[in-house]
Length: 568
Image 1: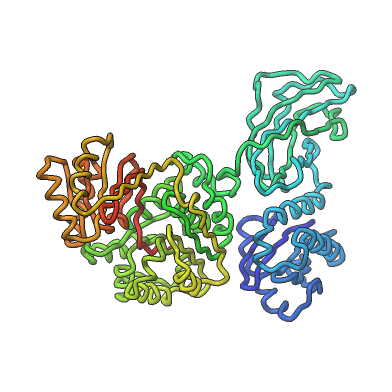
Image 2: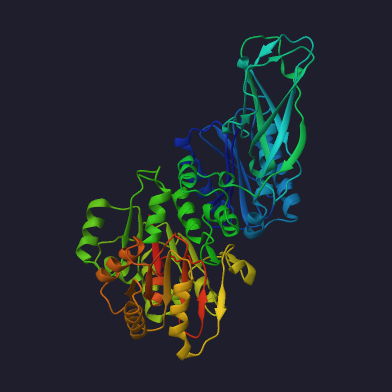
């Protein structure tokens, strides 16, 4: 019996794993044991040179292929010789996909196709272990296609003339992985009971995602020993691609998928599609993409997917997506709030996820109230702003040094200059880099932008005209300085516009109170410095005015910036 197949990188991180018949409570032991075994014995080993071990009456054959280590575990009929044959088939399949012994980057780039090959190989190895009342068929939707991850397809079930009549109640259909675990229960058109006639064909249209373009199709029957596997055929009709991959294709926890649906998300954005699969694997990530493309959701979902349960907007995102993970505790810490209250939270609530500004996080860490020795995920949102400021960079570096070496690091920003990218990479180990540099992609769909060139003397008059003429829910007007914000707010109030002002000259408590008043609709116009661009998030449709140099109006989405996220 084939028990396990694992791929690991040179750092001992698991890249791919397949278990068969191994209880979940024993899998952690096998992961740790195999990684330790490889670390002790695989140094200097050549590609395809096989090593053999025995542990607890099971056999282990392992080797190196490029930058990855491969471990195959079996027992009974899968002795050393059988496992050696199996690992040869596996390494040959990986070579075929990658074209050569893969580097870790090539392996991850070809991850989907490699998993497809592995599932076919392992499934074939388990083909003999079919239950008496279960008929298992491999459904190949079409050759692997990296662009289409969901589909509709038709399975026709044909019974032989010698088979007795079977009703729908006596047959159920499900889709699962290579080991019989159900991936999803398909929706079948015309659910009313029908009879399978002799020599008849019964066709159902089945909809659902199929990761890596492969799934296993199981038929269950009750009674009637005369209906045997060889008397059933299945085939495909009319493969139709529907859309790019859904969140289900990332194999997220069911609790996360429920929270995603509750949040109103249907399909991942381009950034999420590129980043989430690699982030879930624990890979370091640098990502630059426009605000509103879902960067925050990347590290929130990938962290919640990996976290084991034993500031501002980012905290809200964690709380939103962890709705069905009640054991996950999230806390946010930032300056301007009594530090004692934050220390009490750390002492009494012991959060799994901490979101905060660098200064406050560092202060709590220096005072030993926030322990960082068990941090597993380290994220910077709007990393360019934090690393461009030397003072803030020093804070980030000091926090970073307090955390373990073997952690995942992810950094995100709407703008990431060529100068700051090397600085980001110094915090990471061979990161995956996603840069949306195309100007068309940097502008969100549905965004309406207008540019008006005006002299300094014309601005106030034109702004009044626009506020009178435009139909809006709320307006945010950005200015460069604290003085300019106060002056413009006073001018708007004199013209009887419902205006409020926020800038760095106010205390944190006053800023939050004013922002809450604006968000709740008590004021329709907000005059602010870039401080609000770093700290607010408003979902309603509204207008933004850039009051310096030009006036820019658009649908505006603003997120909390300059936050560090630490997850234990």
